[in-house]
Length: 369
Ligand code: SAH
Image 1 (cartoon, rainbow, N blue to C red):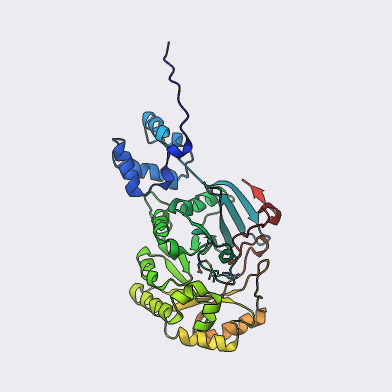
Image 2: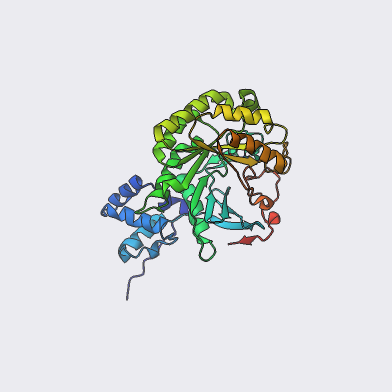
């Protein structure tokens, strides 16, 4: 008669979450098991490229290896993903982290692109007055795998024939306040052998302007966008106090010029247009002086309102007027289409305040998955 061994249930917390390992620690992990080093890359391929949720699927490991791995490790992914669909095709994804907090990502279809906007923190340390995320404060930094998992989760739920073409780190949070996790995530997203193989030129990191860290973005070989949003220190202090009081405008612009020299890449400046606050002709003229001669392009973002927001969105003609002053000065200027506003999925609309309703009632055509 075969001997039946009773397996004791191991508490989840005692198992290593394979997704939480970076390549170095994964190599150490397999070495400790007495396995060859290349096993780490095999496992990573399953996690990232094939989005495996079950160790049993890792068929290039022997059955014995899979059984052994299952006794000490697990694959911990985001859970309870909810999708809010906007009338314009934009989709906001809300998914649960292991500690119960929600992470938000937004998928934005455009003519020939499908852009995914990722969060890097839950909430934000900064207090930009025009941004809902700033109002909720920082709950915590996301870990590298939680940033990557937003891509995996969205990929699990794409419509037939869809493929994510671009990533922007412009969701909840300030990426440069969580640089270590962000750079680890970018390694996993770009690595073409065991990672997702997304080209760095298709990834854009957006910062509120943590000047000394711009040079670190150069090393990541992704595009950089800087949220300028004001043309004088006094104005920027009012709109973005936490960042501008530490890294004032002149210091930020010097770091931007350095970045362009160092990388020879074109920088993007973002500018949220707030009616009657920073959208006048004088603002536009100061703007052109500040950026004089810099290799850059400009994205104007008409303010997206959220419940209780103190600012107003400028009229279309005010936006075009601002744009034309910049154009006349020779700048490459685009107006960002505001997508997903009906599901609070546009720039500055991510996050929830205490007492906010659960996401479901916001849904126009919500779906759980
Ligand atoms: N912390 C980073 C990334 C998150 S914000 C940063 O500041 O760049 C992403 C972009 O949305 C920034 O350019 C920000 O200025 C803009 N933004 C924030 N709130 C907005 C709102 N209510 N309407 C329009 N744009 C907004």
